[in-house]
Length: 288
Image 1 (tube, rainbow, N blue to C red):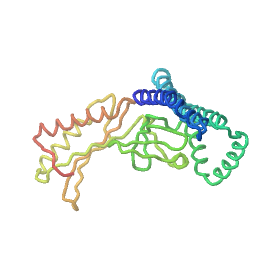
Image 2 (cartoon, one colour):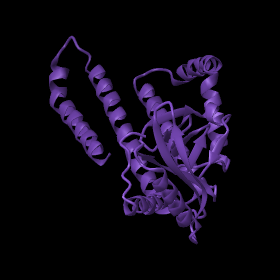
Image 3 (spheres, rainbow, N blue to C red):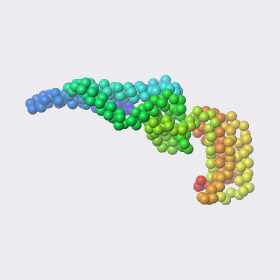
Image 4 (cartoon, rainbow, N blue to C red):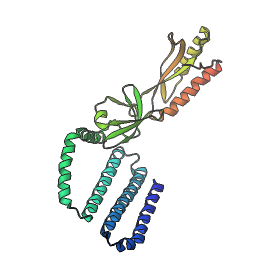
């Protein structure tokens, strides 16, 4: 963002130099009104300056977020909204000032803008629904950016809540944008707030493994689950055979008893279980 800001500042300087260099030549042209040259230069400069100001505001809000509000639940929801409203307000002031400088009647334009706004508001009820939905998400405690949620059978991480949509990502970094009016009607399970999170680990086993080795493996998993753990407890372990695809898997499900990083916990449990398989000389199947 900072590099882009420097580029726009250099562009503004270039426009100013362009104006100073060409103005004398433009004035010398008798059939051309140099005031139009002034108006165009002013309009371009105003747009660039406004863009620079909004980017500086983005940087300031980002620093405020990282320093003061990163761990504040309400602040994490409100800051992006305040940032967006501030930027919209600055753009509105800049456009009004530019229109006024160009010689247009601002009052008349605002009247027509209000009429068109009413027309668009009636036509775009969805935008209004998303706006109200965003405020509902902000002031509710259902979830916040950074939370791990479950919608139906899919699990997502909340990345951002804006005025119109909520941005989610899954474990494979696939991104999903859901309109706020839709997400507030969904049945959402906040896994971050759930103390006892369930996690399933599945190991694909080769069909050539003997029944004796399978029984020994299940007993080893049972013994592993019976060990005293402070941060997790065994939920279930079972052997799954898929006759259609001719595959067999062993499943181990446990509940998290802590609010610590569940990804790290799952990795540690996986490595412990994998160590049991290695000790018994059982290699995993290439297909699940």
